[in-house]
Image (cartoon, rainbow, N blue to C red; front, side):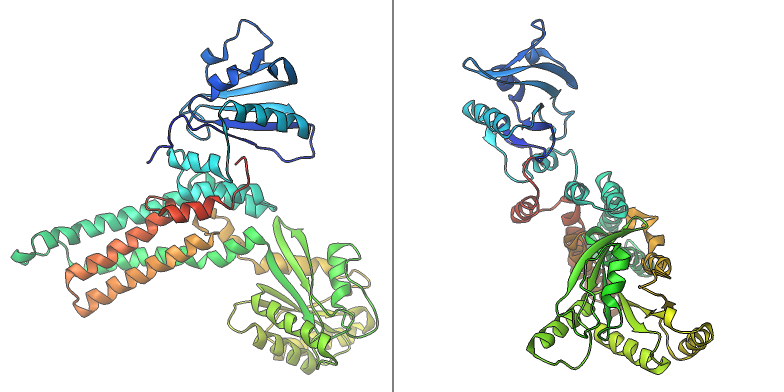
Length: 469
């Protein structure tokens, strides 16, 4: 792995505002020596230049007689640090002036202000983690649900990296046989049975496709699972959103068409983050604004993972089924799960409720939940179905879930390359062409972990990190 240029010391605040204390990070060869010029240990017997890694030293920072702050230094020695370099973390008071002044003093000493993600990029360049793990650092910081945290933590600890590397090694072993045959092409020698080689590629491709298929789930868990609330006007969509959120988020009115734009809020249910989207009622538009609102509704439906199709208990089974079928048609082949929510069930008798349930079971394929937003009845049923709609069993094996679009695209390229290999075996394509496709598959797997990574891709990845990380 390429090493970061020695002597290039960087610094940046590593904490956000709002607390009583702040941390400023410094990394690079010479970090400790630079701090020694402005830091005075409370214990005069301590020389931080000689201090071992993992030392905590209390003292003050000052410059040219100007007292700045009492601080605590955390010293890390190369290679046992986050970046793999000598590194110091300065714990100081969170005053913006104090932080700014310490950074100014460091810069006056020749330290450079770090760019976004530069500390993590150094960790990657110095071999402390692969690229997939480095990207997981950003995901871990951004995680706002238990499931998203679990996925990011698994990737940070190398769970997915191990699986990707295993696939890569299998392909490397596979291609070595092909390369050997190419070396002896004039003798027309085959070193492996073509049937066995085909079986190997089929197995590897199946594993790659399984990983790629997990992206929809992984991406939804990382960003929040989109749940669209749709239906005719005045069936209680906004009331349902309010009772799910347990707050008056959406305006509720008896006047049809009150919601003309989408309203989005998030809710944690069972360790998962759901992004609820209340939409304009589906009907023939009465004016240009309503038409715009319904067009946005259609777009949200096409991007949804789950749809709560809301009807009211006064509707007939045929009307409810027709509404659900219309929503399924709009979602197209997106794979969205449609759940029927029959609202205002408190306004019908138990006999009518049982009859409607029986009728819907016979003519509608979507599960139907009878609720009353006004009475807050049946809301737990919705929450339970939301959790059941997510492939939670796949979350039990987070090392096999892809959350990053870059990784997904690379896996699709791997799968395409392996399909060409299979087609080549079937059609009797020359070995040299098959070898090219195998090398392409290895290349794309290497891009995921960073074994093969163009500089422009690195710049794009780390530019999305926050300063100080």
